[in-house]
Amino acid sequence: MWMWIERLKQSLNAAAATAGEHRMAADSRPGDLLVDETDRRAVTTAHHARPSRKLPSHDMGGRLFALDAIQRAWLAVKRAGGGAGIDGVTIDQFETHLETELRELQQLLASGRYRPKPVRQVWVPKTRGGLRPLTLWALRDRVAQRAVYDVLAPEFEPHFLPCSFGFRPGLGVQDAVKALQAHRDAGMRWIVDADIEDCFGAIQSDRLMGLVRQHVTQRLLLRYTRGWLDADIMNSADGRPRKTGTSQGSVLSPLLSNIYLHQVDVVMMKKELAYLRYADDYVIFCRRRRDAEAALHASEEALARWGLRINPHKTRIVHLDQGLNWLGYFFVRNECYPL
Image 1: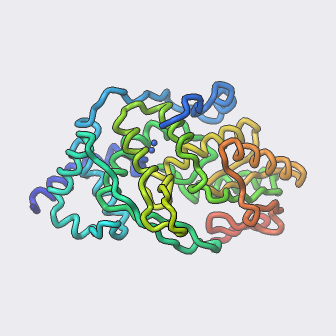
Image 2: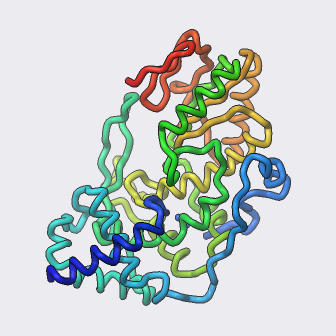
Image 3: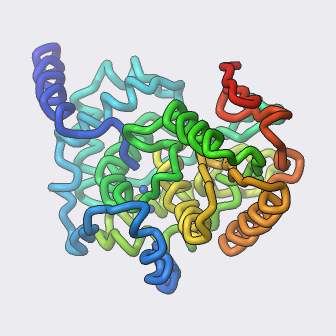
């Protein structure tokens, strides 16, 4: 057993040198393009992505879900930590029979026989007040999601725009802060500070899968992604049958939300607005208050096209002389303080 684990670590160390740390992904409306041709031309000067290649439509279960890919997925899940899902299996318990668990999961995924377990839901406090639902997945499901994420994320990441910072490999809060300071130093002191209301819960699964299909045609990837969106929540707050959707707690949800919100990013960049988004929070920098009011309206229209809306209680127009609290930092005039 220990020799097998050592061989696993050695192979993963070599793979980590060429693979990024973050990867993720997603059935439905054929008319929902990832970016239409007009929008694509509008953002070409802002972002030069490599041409996307669609994953092949014929089944490649054995290649997509090779054992070394499942092993890498396991190590990523282990690093992230977390508790047990509905089956009660913890990381330590899973690791006790690691080789058997990973081989069984690999065979299920490669053969098309894998099915997700139902999930439990808990409510956790938000940093800015209120509660948010968090889904607790079985450990085996989290490893499977990570394996699919590692395949799908590279297909979508090259298309995302420089205005998007959340859940992006090689990007983070500090990059968003630097972009904010650049707009500030350019004299844009009026800011739309906005939050998308129930963003993860409001994403429409059918439209999301339509976007995913623009780059992915391999049926196992699509089936598994759809299966996770449609997994049952066993203890919904109102007692009614609920599906998980792009629930927070899923390994795939951050990528899926970026795929969906990319549509909004494209519209905002087309309008040449100084717009920055980190997950479901965004800011727009303007020179005058009336410009900020127009920018807020434009963002509301862009969100509405995709069934989303702002949270009126967490959205405002503010001048930097008053101060802005964003991503754990307080910005006031030309100063920036960590909170």
